[in-house]
Length: 537
Image (cartoon, rainbow, N blue to C red):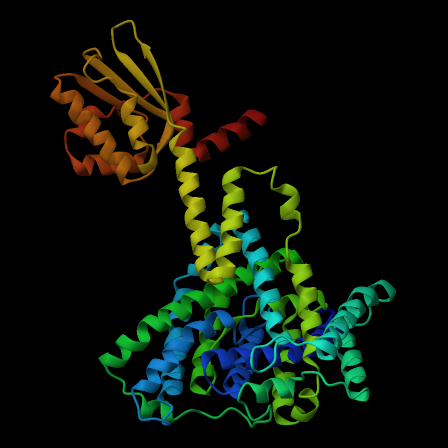
């Protein structure tokens, strides 16, 4: 028991300090995304608290931070606006339609976990992952530039701009230099505290968390505990029309949330050399969104920037996420006045350091060392992440990679031709036979000029899909139409079963009795292993 407790608390100090840092960085992000979605800042803060706490406790990736995110907020804008149009002016029905949508989104995500769809994140190629990381770094950087503008959208100028730049540079300098002196102190938290003290004691005229909230139309950070939203059940009619309205939004939000969360999980796995549980994360994200929808939050998913702050700050366990969520609630309930005095410049400096640490600078070095198709995928995913969002970029990258893979494999189909002494022409097929290689496969045969007896040997080929089976079926029909005899050898068992179902005549075409050790070893790998072990003995 002592050993168990020691292992669990070994990183407690780093988890706690990193969690506090993350909580400070969560405040402006959650508030900003709430403004983007067109809802009150507390709706975003409550989402960050509830989703962060639940996923920290039950999620599949310790150390990953979840909360309200921009990728979801941009979809919620039109949802809230259309929902408001259903009611009278000032009734604010859009907010309750948002809550209902977030609840449905959560059920969809939990269903994905039950069906174990999280494992499909393994199908994401490395160039897509690298493009995602680079695009993400650019998006985080561009988001911070908005902090250099005033409420009218004009860039800061004069002393205001220089003060902002100086405080940002000081924050980055502390985060860069402190680890070189000692690694026992959390550089991000120390940087925020030092810059905040300088700005407050020096009475600098700079944007703060409080001014940021008020400029956006909010009244402040202070609030109470989240309340159960009984109005959802009275103001939102539970009928087919409502489902038709919120269903597509819920599906899109669920997909974006899971893609962003699982990609972040994959990234954290690489940074920590550990393995998270994707299906458990799907379940936790879904459950968290159901709870946050019922208690007045805007929904969310994994927050990549905050997760990287946590990992780079030493946060590795569930404690770091729990501390971040509870500290955020503490800020809302008791310390709103203090947090509102934190300069935005300090938080921008922290995020700039996250950008530098996130961008895969090695991608420039390997551009001339990897296939041109991988370069195209990398650049396309990075660009689409900036232009659209992470979900669109990742899906597009996977599709491009899949098409490239199919094209490359389609060119690998080969046919070695030889004549037997009895006059039979033998085609030995090499390479995968699937939808992409069908045309090349058909071009290998000379039906009109071939002899009376033809044999097609598939021992070095694999029939992969229905298109391939259909191609074999058509090939047999062509030879039979010419009055010639064709035989098929070394087809896999599953392929033979499908061909027998498609037509009884294949029982005459396929050769079952084969005396070829290559075929039997390919069909029965256990026998090969057993034979190898007996040979060694």
